[in-house]
Length: 330
Length: 281
Image 1 (cartoon, one colour):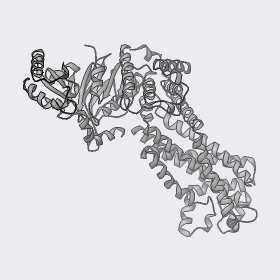
Image 2 (cartoon, chains in turn brown, cyan; image 1 turned 60 degrees about the horizontal axis):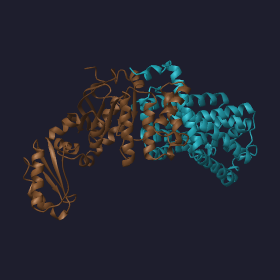
Image 3 (cartoon, chains in turn orange, green; image 1 turned 90 degrees about the vertical axis):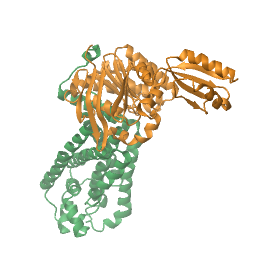
Image 4 (spheres, one colour; image 1 turned 90 degrees about the horizontal axis):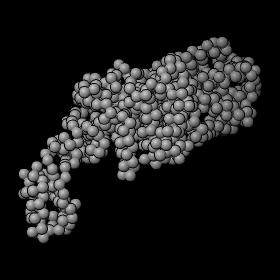
């Protein structure tokens, strides 16, 4: 196996009383997308800030592109790109001026900075808005410009800290397409997200981080396997009959399962006998005269995984972990 | 290793620092051009001060001044220093804004000189100070301000006032990066600057203050700067007035020396403080 592009060993960082990272180990192979998944305040941003030389760790070490992030920070910076949680563009400058400025700060000659800025704008569908101040841009456009700024220097390693937080669903989908394309170019990418679906769609490998620790590591499939096999999802057309339907099918699996009266959905972990149980479920419900809107076998979502790993859902963790999140900028 | 990395030149340290500082100076100057209201409103305030002092208080103040010194001629050196210092506070606001918007993070992750953000900010804001002091000069002329000495002396006073502003941009940079929020910076910088600007001889002769306040006013650098610029623009008339009011002024040479020492002293403290806090931000 080649040397990993990103390597963290026992990385630690505290902000006063708050231990943001408590010994994080990570390994990211060249040319892959690595997803750092966790709720707000889990330590994702702290990890990114250390890896992009913005913050010194208290303990452990980290190498990016073979350079130590503390001792060789200066040699490392030309090789990395960062797009942050907040669209870090100067809103009084035009899109073109923003990108040119970043190019000049990578010490590109003026003409080359301009050429690359134009190319990035075109690639991100911002050519028409190139000469408008960034404050006139929509949220999605700003985020694309911010991402564009991180690419002007053609970094080997790209860090995207919650690239789609705060975007509407359509802009989020656009952003996903853009990120997928980046990976085709061979860039190594580390992205953080609190959206389980995002990690699932984009990342080759995922590390689940919670309370400053990596609590699970692996491909999306491997993580889902930790919840155990498949899930049978039944959606009842008539909400009134959810309880009756649940009574009929909940006993089918090896145990567990839940019924949701609001959505009319009943989910049952089914282990390896999915198909047999699916047939049996259809037969029973049909026998009871319960009409179905939908019935399917699905792999557990990362939501299910997160719940199984941490005992809480990603969303409920947000509220309790707000304080450490604020430590990010210190 | 990607092809992109090879294309990036690695200029010498000094060349990079100058080039990066210039890129950011341009960026900050563009902001002034795109948001003209920033300059307009910060200019209106000193203009109002001039009108207030000249037309409202001026009549009363002229009673303590000799007929050789119209109050507006006495006042303007103080207004120039006040304008330069208040205008310099924008540096702190601008940096706090960049911090809040994540721009400082972006800059710090780039392979640019560490000095560029502060150098570019203080330089651009000093250009704004030059512009504002020039504008005040025009307003002063309109309300009757005239220099009593030569153009060379006046020019020296002008450069002096702008230099004072430059020194204060560094103090403001430190405040901005320490407090981190635009609102806090705005509130705090005015409070910090107030005793310097107002408890000085900027608007009235310090000889009229109670003893304890005079003690402060006499060591206050603003008093030293304003007295220096007064001596440069009013000449003998000011020296004679101070002598006759029992509060003789130091020689121009001494004042120039003290002014420069304060200017360099503030920079010697504020620049390392600013750079240090920027590195830790």
